[in-house]
Length: 176
Image (tube, rainbow, N blue to C red; front, side):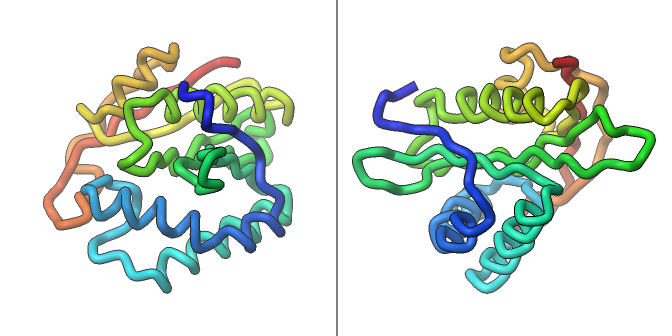
């Protein structure tokens, strides 16, 4: 990874203060065609509302929010979440959600570094099983496989691309 990128966990207060930067990353990913729960065009109001919800989850201890920051510019260039809150019969599990890397920071190891940091944050929180899903055939799918995640299977026509049209989704798990 580029030495000018630093990873850290944001508090709920920091997340609230950085909503604009987080929204910029999310909007860039959606505009670039990433199927990450939002349809295009993604408005700033909708993106900001999503991050306010995330900040609330951080405040309540339901999730951990990690970011990758370009140290030279102070900009957030990537983010990932560890969703800690699970059903009562799954206290050992967490979900990895919204691993996003801004288009200008891709192919620099940011995604891999975020995933390793998310795994460590989950481990520190006492989790031993992680689960995630991603678009089948995507760069993210190849990244997760390289990082030792185990492919569970594919659900055809699971979600929509931001501009419309169905895409398949691959589920992964990792024992940590």
